[in-house]
Amino acid sequence: MPQLTPQVSEVLEKALALSTQERGLIIDRLIESLDDEPADEGVEAAWSEEIKRRVEEIQSGKVEMIPGEEVGRRLARLSNGKK
Image (cartoon, rainbow, N blue to C red; front, side):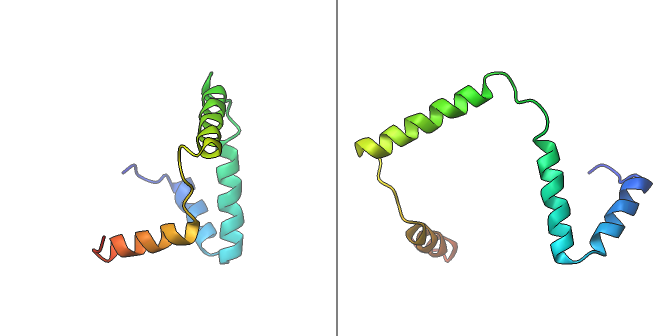
């Protein structure tokens, strides 16, 4: 793991002293700043095609949606060692 520079350590120390809400706002802004860079060529088009394909599979009945509650129950069973 890379070493923290003194500047980064100072910023981190100050950030950790903030409230949970304030830290959340900083996290949100930092994540947004990562998205400021231009996307790799073709990425947007590829995701658009993938989304279109998945929607068509749902609409045609090729795949079946699973309600979020059911997914949660299944995950809970798996984490408890059950199938």
